[in-house]
Length: 122
Image (cartoon, rainbow, N blue to C red; front, top):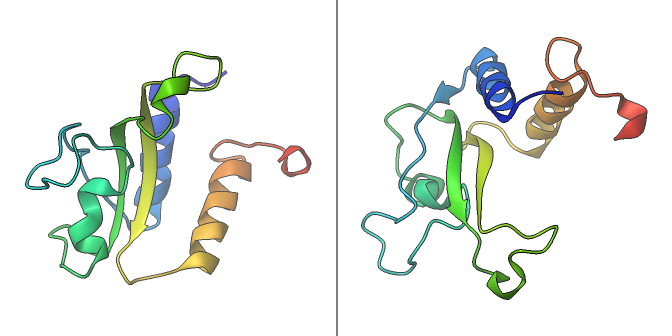
């Protein structure tokens, strides 16, 4: 069994091998955004860069972001709904798209060097 810390580190390390810069997650309370109270998705802090602004770390990024679940807040507390969670994210800011992203995900999940999950079980 892999711990959350080990999984997080493997994810960052994997994408580092794919020329992604590791960036820090941001606050649960978004800065300079009056449209939301909390960060509800891993992409939220990156919106300006996803819309075209240049990111200081480059076009390939990887991070993990703490988030607060709000879309189904009335169901929080059962066996499948949590209040807070952490999203792992790899980001291409105009550098690659679905084909490469899917290949990276498959490699991370199935390669013996990373998670080594059995493809037939996915």
